[in-house]
Image (tube, rainbow, N blue to C red; front, side):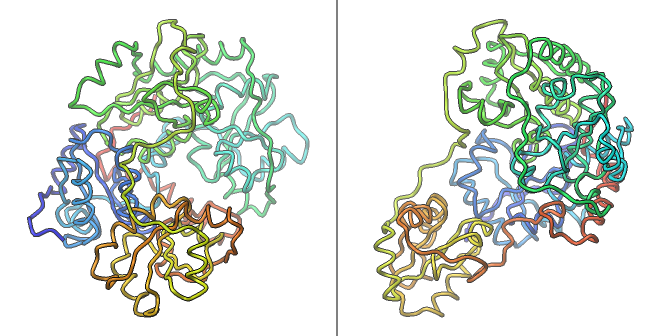
Length: 547
């Protein structure tokens, strides 16, 4: 722990910056579950455990004003995180005075759950625009009667496959305006949009309304939660996806509508030269996002643009752009063909959420020549530390002789799915406390081996502990290639919560996930969403408006 006092910032100063639209990143460095229990509206969860892997991608400008907090003023997590951010090159990092408790004691509003800015904005849209909706019973009746209706699921495809409304098609929210005409070519066909809860249903439905889709459109009120609470069955493992091709006529009609909606919301258009001028302004953060599907992005994208499919960008803005007051530039890769849809629609919502947002306009240039990079989205990260590595075969020999203590710092859900026999799950941020206990329980082990899915995070964990007095002179290694390499070598695995050295606080279990949630928890989640507009009013920092 540092002996030099760290700079601090008061809750009042953070609030003043938010109200003045000045750039600031309010960072909660706890794990996701405690973060989800309560946090300020504009706090972004960037846990101490994953700082090296996420910070550079999420806070790209090193002199961004950053306020860091944990639970209270003496929180070791916040102090360690501040020092680690400084080591990563950030020059304006300050501790929030009093931590979360100080924010609350100063009169600051606190919110539950995750992605709260987007969810509260969705409720505001519904309250202002009275977005059309139908109950689960009404939608089930239409399906049962074989009415002329299509149900479009606005979640990610992996979420859709977990559970979906019977007969529905996966159309992630950012694709709705572009694809809906092909899925409901008859204007008389009723279009129902659903998600798991409320937000993506509301935003997806209102997107189609705003874009002038001629069909009758409605949200499935309360999504799959409402469907489940109504006692109706869900489908599992479905694979119906939107058609990849869009006719020229449909694309042009959607583009005209999307651009009109975006201009109404105050979205700007930037030429590549104007974008260069923005990027040269080193006093401002400019996020650049390509809002197409991951498959399209991987096939070819512009240098410097991260992938954030439009619907998820609007849903998870706090994840993609934690610097409030920053600028955002979007592209959908189609500007040169005149069929821009996804970027303007996503931009229209971000503008209404108080962001300064622009769409990249290529002035009719050859877009194909601009898509110079290929491959999936990759966040910038510091080089992995040099640590001693052991092969899977070597680790297997050590374990056979009870000569190694294996610590798995992967996500707990991955640990439960499969892990090395005898490995302990641990939250990286808790290692100083966890490791001391585990060593006391396994004194014969001369080696400590860290692993995770790929060894990426494990390398940082091993580096943390290699020189620590806690290890008592034991050799510290990382499993080369991580658990993935262990599996590839055909070595045995364990499953389940066999050895939890840390509680599973690294991820918050959403009440709308899966199919085994209690009805009371699902209803409580819906009640919470309904109360978000009132919370927004009390908070007063949001700058939301609805066109």
